[in-house]
Image 1 (cartoon, helix red, strand yellow):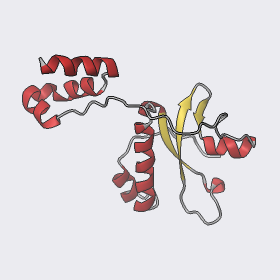
Image 2 (cartoon, helix red, strand yellow; image 1 turned 90 degrees about the vertical axis):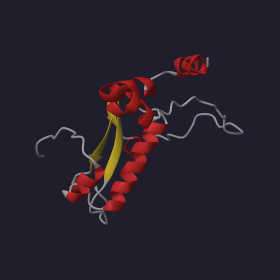
Image 3 (cartoon, helix red, strand yellow; image 1 turned 30 degrees about the vertical axis):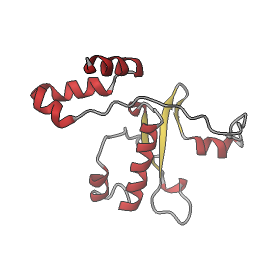
Length: 145
């Protein structure tokens, strides 16, 4: 096997332009997967996309990527795990209907924050976006006073 390469952050458009990702359609779905990981609460600092080696791809594929999440067991691709272990990864218990959960999402008015905080805008935005639900609600109540 060749040398192991470390993950490198890169914009999807740049990866397509450099020929790292095979085409724009594949890049689009990598982006959609990233958005899914973000939306379900995966720590984005613990996830990566890994390009399949030539011998790992289906005969009809010329490029393939897996979204992997770092766990206490290492980086984990559940599809590969299910296939190799022959373990069914479906839920242990089925419920009659989905559970709907209301969550608080902080949406920062970046233009206003930029105007008010200038060079500190990024730090303020990062702080606000990192607030937990209780802190976000408390801040909202205080802002209305």
